[in-house]
Amino acid sequence: MVRAMDELGAEQSPPYSHGNYFVEIRKKFLSYSWVHRAFFSDLCEALFTIAARGDYWYIDSNFALHSTRRLNDSYRTFSENLANKWPGYVLSSSHHIENSTDRLVSMDALLSLLRSRDISGYERDKDLFFGPQARYTTGIS
Image 1 (cartoon, rainbow, N blue to C red):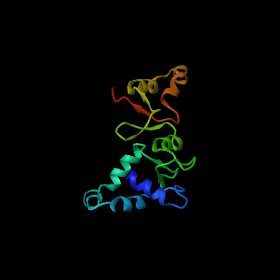
Image 2 (cartoon, helix red, strand yellow):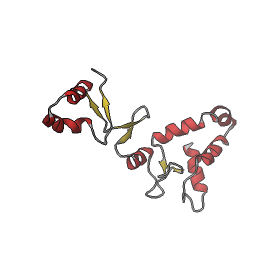
Image 3 (tube, rainbow, N blue to C red):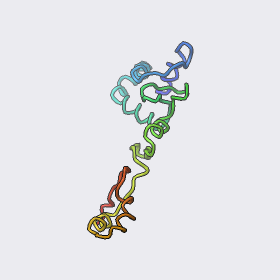
Image 4 (tube, rainbow, N blue to C red):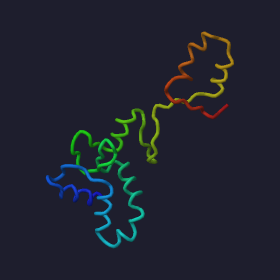
């Protein structure tokens, strides 16, 4: 797929002037041999997605155009685009998008805070449990 993408970029006038859409890359990739058409035609989208998420090439800011070269400042790797669009989110080693800034809270501590009548303790600890950032319980109570 990288070869197909690179050849499509070289064929542009001028060479490497803009990215390529997935449909163009897929068509070029499948034209290489009957093996590609027979075995990879159904897997092309999955392989393409895995390779893009693995930062094998550059993608525009809309995740639509792809290129083997960084054509301008809007072309970044998948991880760079992810960090730019959604700060705090990262791609895990299993290629799942995760929020790296999530906070875990103890369910027992949360219930204790809610049951307490200690206003000063509530004011002191409320930012640990409430706010715009996502919080998840440890699941242990």
